[in-house]
Amino acid sequence: MHGLPESLIEELQAGRIIPYLGPDLLDPAGPVPASQQTLVSRLTAKVPVPSRIRGNLTAVAQYIENFKHRKTLSWLMREAFAPGAQPGELHHWLAAMPLPLIVNVWYDDAMHNALAASGRRWGLAQGVSRAEHKGDIWFKYYDPEGQPVSAEEAAGWETLLYEPMGAVKPCGNFIISDSDFVEVLTEIDIQTPIPAIVQQLRTERGLLFLGCRFRTQLQRAYARQIMKRSAGPHYAVLPEELTRNEQKFLAEQNIQCLKTSVPLADRSQLSA
Image 1 (cartoon, rainbow, N blue to C red):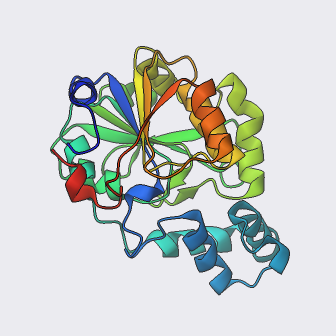
Image 2 (tube, rainbow, N blue to C red):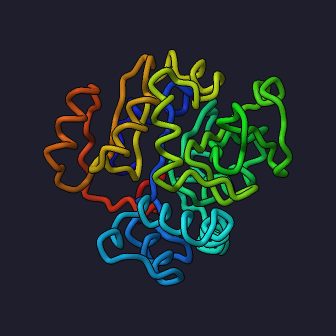
């Protein structure tokens, strides 16, 4: 596989590394938003927002929620991701491995679709918005058909796809607005929003960040808390120049940066 050391591939194939997938794995010319910038452009094309927040995804989502209702925000998000993301070679390559846990921190369904075609026993754990799910509910488990299931049933799957910010499938759960993230980040330091299964699976494993950047405080916070109490080692494929904050974050979290000239969107070149 171009860009990945053989030793890391062996660790993946042995299930000792957890892939952590971000939007940069998607084709930027594809039918669904493949970046925060693209998504915020889709939303503001539908709902005019003040110019001062137009480039801020979570603030735009909060404005729509406040002035057009949460149902409008959820509908716009489902509409943006409804066309579906075609899995690339990398998604299929990961889906074929004996990986107990895969993390996806975007709202697409590419990894979902790859697992559905893999023949493996798998299911989902998704973060849910407290604006739509009252009570002490931070996440839900779903089987491949989209039916809610218990944590006990989820524990029997070969692969758990964990989507902490939700996703378009199966039910359009989205953690997207400022208030959504305030709710989660208030509790995430004590790990309440992270399923116990995820916490258990990470303890003896490291993470491999693919298609992710750590430019914003929010991106770093999610990565930091999902890595928490994991054994390591950790790796990140980051082909571009890093910001100062990214460099500091990688050093603090002891994440080895794997430089590669292969664009992550060119998934065929990343496959074995």
